[in-house]
Image (cartoon, rainbow, N blue to C red):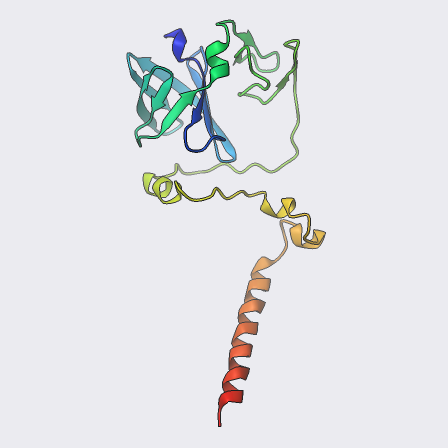
Length: 192
């Protein structure tokens, strides 16, 4: 495998999405709020990325990957400037780039001395059960990404309203009933 393809590629339009190609033929893809791992193969200027249930093809040349939908993934400068020395994560034995701050496989933190420190995250993680279709990608491509973490970040709301199990459906139904009642009252007042 060519050594000049390894590294981190950032999505040109959405800077928070990235693809990390590892020297061992594995990759880590982060899009939105979830990460996906799998394998990849490079054959000349063609790259094939294999997921759990599908494969995607694209072109790779001069530090740019153009995927099958025409989106560009640009190799980061830090990756280009890094030497070809790779270390191993002490937590999961995955390959790490010299510039890595976290292991892209297990999430362990890598400190300045190269020592890996596992981290624990106490939050619910939802994984998509079905692959995202091209139509869905196209319909949301230019829209603002929606985060599942919006309620906890709204500190101005009372704590009871920021809970995951708050019955928002009842609030919506009550609002609908209130609008109907107001329309009814206005209609009765305007009657001769």
